[in-house]
Amino acid sequence: MAALSDSLFVVTLVAHLIAVVAFAAAHTMHRAAASRRPAPVSAEKAASAVATLVAPPAAPPRLVTAHRARACGVAAVAVAAFAQTGCLITRALAAGRVPWGNMYEFIVAVTLVGVIAWLALAVRRPAVRALGLYVAVCSVILLGAAGLHLYTPAGPLVPALQSAWLAVHVSAAAIASGLFLLGFLAAVALLLRVRFDRRGAGRPMDLRDNLAARLPAERALRRLSFRLHAVGFLLWTFAVMAGAVWAEASWGRYWGWDPKETWAFISWVVYAGYLHAQATASVRSTTGAWIAVIGWATMMFNLFAVNLVISGLHSYAGT
Image (tube, rainbow, N blue to C red; front, side, top):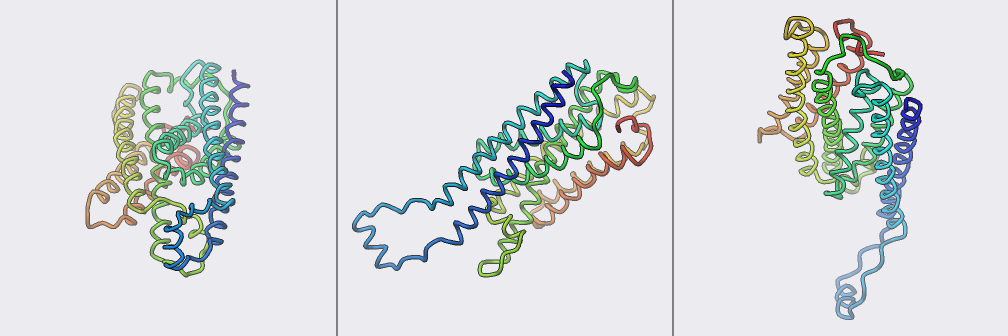
């Protein structure tokens, strides 16, 4: 089972890489098709076409190919999600416990939550599929770091983690982190979209403009990011409270300002500020998006720096 889990992890990473290539190809073809659109016809020709019931022209071949490439990207992410789920299940069977007891397993679980959330939204709202490139790239980065530098063979946990609270506390933290991940990507997309809209047409397009051209409208991205962060914030609050109860059962106190606890609280405060900013009409959407970016930065600092660099009672959560 452990060997099968490792093989499924490789399949997951390869599928995400294929998705990156497919989404990038779709984006490039969309831009090429847009740049080669024919000049607009005159009003007389348009009226004549309507009068003679001329059928509208077919979509450009590049645009059709772009839609197929995007569909391939979505399919590759779906394959990655299935393989990633199998990776965690087989690892749980091999270790005889829940499969998020170390950093490697936690990152796999967090990215899986983010990917599944994006797939669910992409099925219901086709406009969200434009975030596929961002989801795939972020998944490759996180999973690549986990596989190359944080991998730990499947096995039993240290005594401090052998508690029923692990399934409650860490599960809530993983789901919240996965939603924060997707909300962070939506916030980054919002910043790119706002910049693209403010620059207007007629200006030379750089890489950021090319990335923003196919994104949903600013309002849709703001609403998506807010909803993801709102649900994630509730789960993160529960995770912090469950961790406090577990700390009292293990160490005889609910809160001790351990580095892990401190940064979990810092993240909670930042995300509370984000929700407050988004609920305030006078605050610009870009301000809230930057707060979301800062919130994700605190999550990454808590995951990597606190676990690997700063020593504390949670140091066993590293590799």
